[in-house]
Length: 193
Image 1 (cartoon, helix red, strand yellow):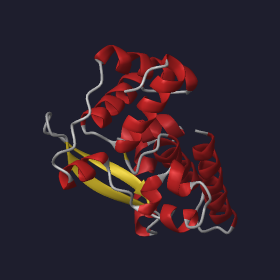
Image 2 (cartoon, rainbow, N blue to C red):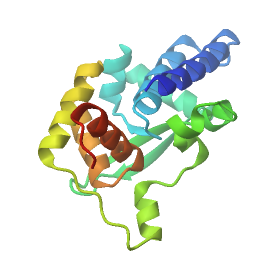
Image 3 (cartoon, helix red, strand yellow):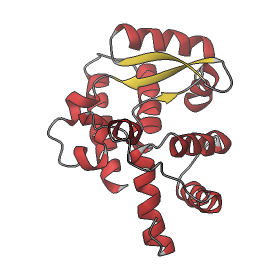
Image 4 (spheres, rainbow, N blue to C red):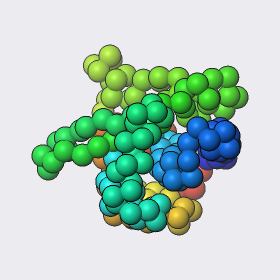
């Protein structure tokens, strides 16, 4: 996690420099900061954030958030991808930062701490390439303990949403999430999974 924090700090500094050069304004910087936290610190490539969530996390009105997001999209600082929730059927937006790969190029911790910067394959991609690999299963009680551990170590505003995201990543076989659970289980529970 400390390596992720260093990456987060370096990226934050990069966007702060953009603010000082008037390439972005204060409100755009605020939105970028939220997206940085929601992706880099949680080791995710993108995050599904609704206008209401943007408003809650930034303290900016929903109407203004829509304008800020459009401005950042037009400046090609963020990307938006429409996605359909598989079981519920509704469509939502996933946001990611476009400059992450450029800023982290050559960063000493990028490959290990944030492999998305280098296009590392996900667990599912590796599984599809190797049909003999077993699907990863974890005991439900262990997942609950892991989630409680994560929540106790972070400031999380939407705990239910956070839990749902982690469970979905486990079910989808996300390599980083599974590696994190294995390391946590080994360090804090003394078990190998």
